[in-house]
Length: 83
Length: 361
Ligand code: SF4
Image (tube, rainbow over all chains, first blue to last red; front, side):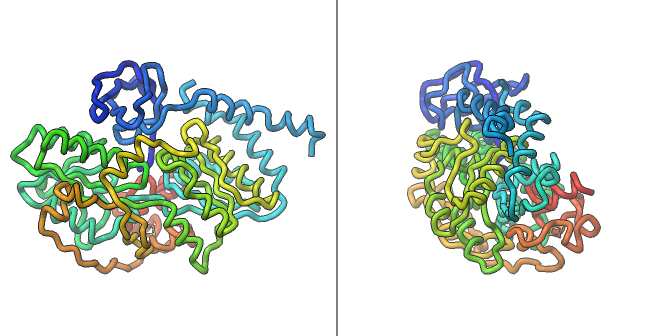
């Protein structure tokens, strides 16, 4: 039930905080999503969506760093002399 | 990046599994709190990639599973009334109450409507002013902001035909109850990344300190979970017990303030009974007095007495506390299947029994 799916905001509609929405592209499926909990979200952002509400803006830099870190795990060990 | 496939990369999964092998020198028993994580672990067989000394046990993080039976009965009562349209996430429809489930109410002609979001229920209330629309507000902290938003939108629209039947639960009090239980084997936690996306990491600090357990806030994709395990194992191998954040692409230390404001405005902390587990103080959310008109329990006359859980064969309490695995239940896969569930963990897509049935039978 805590499932949240990432999608990309294509456009934003409305000004009022409680009813502001975005059209979000989930890999080809477009849905209207509330942006009431992500007031700073703009078109182009990836958001995590749970039950029709965007609950966070995905941090691109952090996402990349996590993957880079995992890529390098074994290289780091080799540099430190293995074992 | 699409933030999905990258976190399922087989070569990277292998690398992290190798690293785990390399650093593990002693047994580690870790619990993943969230049923969504359990599902990923069983689906991708991640438990089978771990060193034999690392055991994952499945936690109570399935809101459908822990909703008390008397609230399911209240939902069934409401849904059976002709003037009411009862809206719910699909997962709740097959959860057995003391006599029947919501699906059988629907089959008998009741107005039970499956929705994807509580905001859809608000829309329905607006379109059908002659009907009373109720949304079954079940969930953890992740779902509380959108339910709060639904109430705020209904209030803004001046709707007097919308209300919530609330059964909201909170994660930290459940972790504390678990750690206080004398049978607890858990030595470290993968905390639920979407709960912490809303609430942040700070409320886990006192738990990590008091019980000396590492708590790693973790995401939901295979690589997220393996990295979460790696971080927890590394902490234990180094004698640390800290709160760490694996899911940095979504979780900020302070959480999502706008979402927290929505929750605080509409809900307050209340005691809550967990199905299969029992009463846990300050472990739930209920509507504040200011929003009482949106509370179905206040608005309609309902039986609020406790209902005895039909004990029978179902050992869901032991499953939810991580003391037994689904295949250790004598009814698993025989008398209890997703088609004919005896207990909620076989119904919900986040229930451990359903995950084992789907991927391990
Ligand atoms: S397999 Fe069925 S009966 Fe056994 S614990 Fe799970 S839900 Fe209950």
